[in-house]
Length: 136
Length: 102
Image (cartoon, rainbow over all chains, first blue to last red; front, side, top):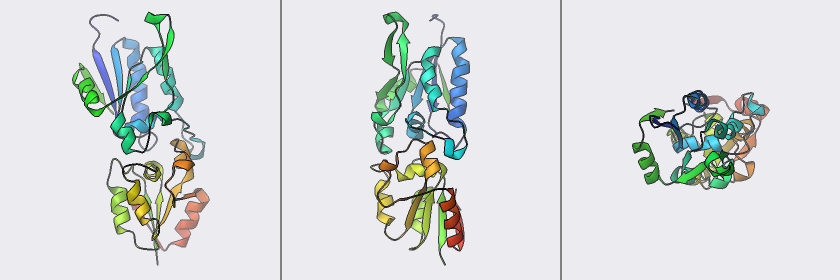
């Protein structure tokens, strides 16, 4: 990654399907990936619902975009931070989230998890340590 | 005379569900739809508020919205009934009034 790359954080705080924010965020992340910046994604508050596994939208006639999160690794987007307190407040644990991985080019393409569970104070540090924050 | 209340917002981002439960009368139905279905997850920060009304109020959740969001029916708070779209219609027909808590 070039030295002049900026640190971008996409903050996701909305549940999927009820509003268009989650899908729009994902679209912008994928478009932004072409610019080879240092990208991180934060999932907190209702945003943690975006990553739950077993989503089946057949009954509501809306596209299920949850599998797209698993493609982020192919676009060098592999830092997904999920807030532990937000999960717990919603009766969720890491086991309720889908598995998202990437292949680490600096480590013989070993498959590694993209999701990092962080505390609220760690999330605050991640947010403070950015050049650009985009909110959804 | 009874009312069907619908709640379509996540209880973790608005006060709609709490306010609805506070205003629903005994014998009413509260139906969780769209992002409102997150209110039906057990062992959350608000699940006690839900179960507290489960005897006086008929609590329901719309199954297609539950499935879309990956919420396992096994994780739904005890006493909350799953309904499909035709069940939604039946509830609307059974109650004399429908009130949406947006």
